[in-house]
Image (cartoon, rainbow, N blue to C red; front, side, top):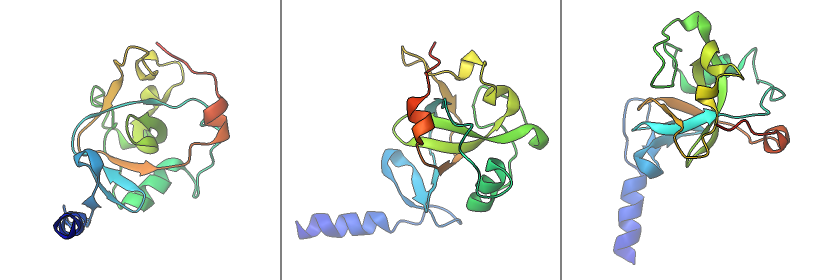
Length: 150
C-alpha cells in the first residue's frame, strides 16, 4: 500500500510542459480548470449555453486569460478555420470530461450546424489533440435545453 501511495504521489507531480500542467486521467494534463487533451476527443456543441455569461467581455477572452494562450484555429479537427477574428469561446461537451469552453469558429458554433450536434450513434465530431479546454459549469439551462441530435 505504501508503494502504491508513493507511485501515486510521484505520478501527480509530473510536470508535462512549460505551463506546468499536472497529470490527469485519459493521458490528459490539467492545471487549475484548464485541461490540455493529449489525443483527439469526441465533443459536440452543448445546447442551452446562451444564458451562461462570461466573466470578462467574452468567453474567448475568458479562455485566453485562463490559458495564457491566444486563439489561432478552430478546435474541431475537421475544421480548417485559422482566422482569429472568427473564433469565439464555444461551449462544448467533451466525452469523459464535461462542459468546456474552447476556441471554435462561428460556423462550428452555429446552432444549426448539424456536424456539431451530439450523435446518437456515437459518431461525434472530434477536438484536435493538444487543444486547451477551459472547464465550466453545467448550468440548469444546459441541463433543461432540448437536445439537437443527429
